[in-house]
Each structure stands twice: as structure tokens, then as C-alpha cells.
Image 1 (cartoon, helix red, strand yellow):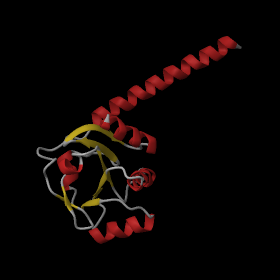
Image 2 (cartoon, helix red, strand yellow):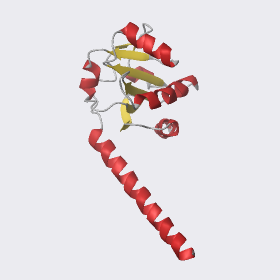
Image 3 (tube, helix red, strand yellow):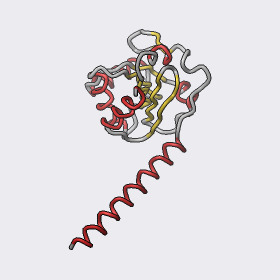
Image 4 (cartoon, helix red, strand yellow):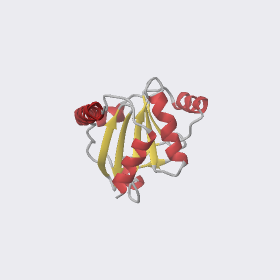
Length: 167
């Protein structure tokens, strides 16, 4: 019985290592490329503010969340991003080709989420970052990209990335 348990444990560890390796390779392969001067480029939020990623990330790490209203995976990630924002984490989101500002605002209201949103209606911002997958999460600290991931990420995964960037 003990040998069977050890074998299962060993196989479980090997499976977890393989899964982690595949995830790291996929993140590396799909990683967005930050455009030149991305930290000083003015961005306009739905609530009328003009911000820069450099200024937002000067004091503490910033989670930049590229999402879309039509993205199935974003439906699971968006509430977690809103929860981080509500807890006081530094968050900015970019809505990729999700319609006009009023359409994005209505979508957010229907979903009951609230966070700062930059509407990328024509996809220009996302193209400049070479975003190929939604959702994509980028952690920026002091105007530099320190972490990226794409696809589904858990609440704790996002929280740990922000914590790690601030260490």
C-alpha cells in the first residue's frame, strides 16, 4: 500500500511539474511586447481621467488587464480583477474592441463590476502591445513590465503577481 501511495505521489509531482512547464512556456510564447514609451503614453479612462502607466505604477505595482466583453474566459477573470480593485489594489483595465464607451459602460453595469477602464474600441492599444490572447495581464512596476500572463488566472495568482512585483 505504501509503495502504491509513493508511486501516485511521484506521478502527481511529475504531472504538476510538466503542467507548470507547459504554462511557463505558453506565457513566454504569448507574452505581449511593450511598445516604446508605453509608460508615458497618455490613456483616457471612461470616467474622463488621463493617466499614464508610469505614473500609476510609480508608488506600487499596477495590474493592467486587457479584456473584452466578447471573451468567454474574461467572464471568469473580470470579477476577480474587480475584487482586487475593490480591495485597494492598483488596477487599470483595457477593453479590447468591446464597442463604444457607452456600450462598455453598460456591459460593466450589467456585470456589476467597477474598475478604471480604457476603451480600446479599434484595438490600436492592444495591437501596439501585440496582444494576441484575451485576457492578458501585465504587471508594471515603476514604469517597467515585470510580469505577463495570458488566459485564465485565479484571483490568488493575480494577487501573488502583484505582491511579488512589490517585493
